[in-house]
Image (cartoon, rainbow, N blue to C red; front, side):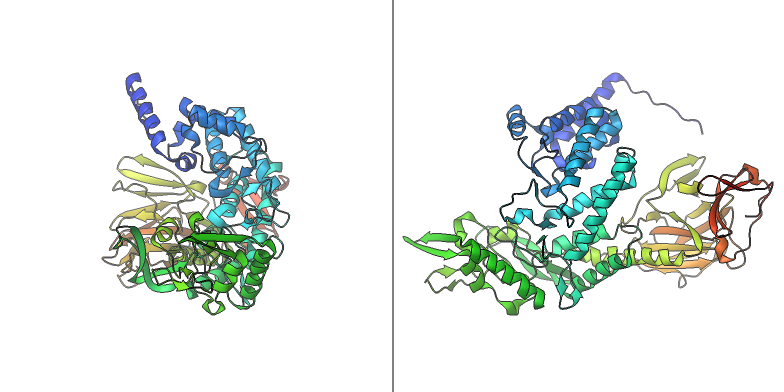
Length: 632
C-alpha cells in the first residue's frame, strides 16, 4: 500500500507543541510519568528540560522524595529540593519508581546517556534497599528508630509499584527494552523473586486459612503491624485488592502462588459486606460527608478489618506491648481541664476482641491526640461515651475523617468478579495447552493495524492477522481478559501462516452489552444457533459475564484461514489457537517447499529442534540433520 507523508507547516507544528506545553502543566506529575503526554512528547525540548530538573533534585543515594510536582517546580522549590539531596529517598506514593519511568521514556526517545545514568542510580537504590527477607520500606536509608516506616510496606501499593517496575525491566519490553544489560536483569529477577517470597510469607494466617494482607508487616515475625495512629493492625481490603491484581499478572505462577491468590480471593469474598455501597452527601451541618447505603449487587470492605483467632491475639499483643514499652502520653484540654492518657491505655481500653472481622476505624488529628490508636467500630455518627476520667469520648468517625480518608470501599469487587475468573481461565488455558503449541490473539500480542482496500487487518505476533471488510477498527476490551472488541454481524477472517495448522480454537470473553446475549453464529463455514456458543449479557450492575467456548476442528486441522462471526451484540474476546505438537501423535502436514519456509519449532527424537532451509538445528545452533524435504 502506498503511504503518503503529511508535512505540516512550521506554524502549525509550533501550535501543536504549544498545546502540549499547556497540557503538561495541567497534568499531575504521576500522569506525566505514566505516559499521558504521548510517546513523541518525551523526546521534545520541554520533556528534556523537565528531565534535567529531575536529575538536578535526585538524591545522592539515587531516589526522590514523594509528592513533589517535578514538572512545574519554581526556582525556589528546585533549590530547596537540591539542598536536600543528601537526605533519604522515598518509595511511598510511587516516589522514585515514577521518576524512573519518566526517565526511561525520555531516554528511549532521546538516547541521551545522562538520563539512563540517573535511571540506573534509581535502580541501584531499589536493589540496595530491598530487605534481606524481601520487600521494601517507605524510606532508604531506614529510620532505624522502630518507626512503622521501616516495616515491610504494602500501604499505598509501595511494594506493588516496585515489583511492577522490576517485572517490566525483567521483561525487557516497552520503555525498558535494552535499557539494562542481561546481568542487571538477572539481579532484578533475583530481587523480584525475593519480593514474591516475602509477599507469600506475609499473607495472614486466619485460624489455619490463608487470608489477605495488612498495609504493613513486621520484618521479623511477618505479623500485621500498625502504621500511622489511625492505621491499626488488620487486614486491608484496599491494599490486598491491589496486591492480588498484581500477583495475577505473573506468568506461569507456582503452585504456592496459585494457592496464595485463591485463598486470598476466597477469604475476601467471604468477608464482604454484601448489598452495601458508599454514598457521598451533604449532612445536616452543611458538611461534605459519606454514608453507607443499600445497593443490590454491590459490596464493600473495610480498609482495616480487625484480625481474629490466634494471629489476631498475637498481633494485638505485640502492638500493645510496643505501645506500653514506648510509654508515650497524649493529652487533650477542654473546659480548662487537661486529660492525659498513654497510647497503651487508649488502645487497650478501646479494643474489643469480639469485633473480629469487622471494619475498624480511628481518628488521626493533631487536635485530638488523645484519640490516637483508639479502636472505633462505628462509621457513621453515634453518641460519645464518658470514660473513667469523665471525658466524653467519640465512638465513631466524624465527617472530616470519613471524607479525608477512605475507610470503606468496593476495592475487591472487580478483583473477585472479573480479574480472578479471568486469571483462573488463563491457568486453565495453560493446563489445556499441554501437548499443543498455542497462539494467543489478544491485546498483548497485537502489533498494529493495517488496511488494504476495504479490509482492515489487526496484526499479531507469529505472523497471524485478523481482517474484516467493514473497516471495523481495533479496540481493546477488559484489560484483565486482554480482550479485543469484535462487532456483531461482521465476518472476521483469521489469516494463518503456512506452517500453522489449528486443531481447536478457544473464544474467551464476554458480551459487551446488557440488552441482549451474543453468540458465535458461524465458524469456518459451520453455522450455530443462538443457544449453542453463548456469551451472556452483562448483569444488572454492568458486570461482564466471562465465558469460554472451545471448538475443535474434528475432521482435519484448519489451515490458511479461519472465519468467524459473532451475532447479537459486540463481544470482547481473547482468542487462542491450539496446534498439536509432535509429542501429541498428530499426523504431519506436508510442505512442498520447506527450504522457503521460516524457522519451524518441533519436538523431534526427544528434543526441541528448529527447522530452516532444509536443516534441523538444536537450541545451541548445532546441525542435527539435513534433508531436502520434510513432513511438518
